[in-house]
Length: 248
Image 1 (spheres, helix red, strand yellow):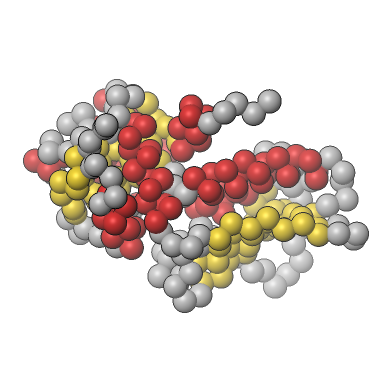
Image 2 (cartoon, helix red, strand yellow):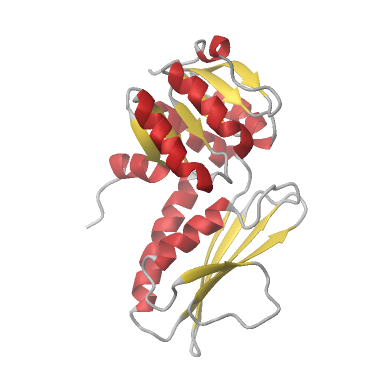
């Protein structure tokens, strides 16, 4: 049985959820850092893998320390899309191991596959329109969520009727070629994502509702287990493509 020494970056909601999830495995948490204390070489060398849920401003520095010390790095931090090229080059430079996901819930990953298939099928009929709505707790730092944007990009790839994403709850008319993502921040909701498919004759809704953060934490640990021994710049999709049955 694989036993990992895990370094955890982030002591917020997800950091605490990882504590609970790791306690149910054979792994151990060897250290924790918060957003204000960056990873150091001394800490990095203690870990077999690092799981990061901090903030985008810390990510590149923490990743480089991990790569310099040949430690695989898993991150669920969002808001760094503009740095994606630089991150990829960094991983390539050090021949390192990096896996990122906006959402580590395996259910969400499969939900996105359903969204892709639904977009492809209903787009062929030409009478349907599409939209996305996401709801999260009031403490969430970004809007729309990284998962909602990922869902939108996935659907755009299959939709001939939509060419771009628009964010926010617009008071004006939404152009026909725009796939709108609307957001809501309420209470302590862990995360709900809804896809709306509508025509004059019927409506279809696909919904994923997280009941807590346990699924996100468990998915990040699974990703860390998978990443050990591999090199490259990976996403959760790469992991799932490797382990799921092939869809004919």
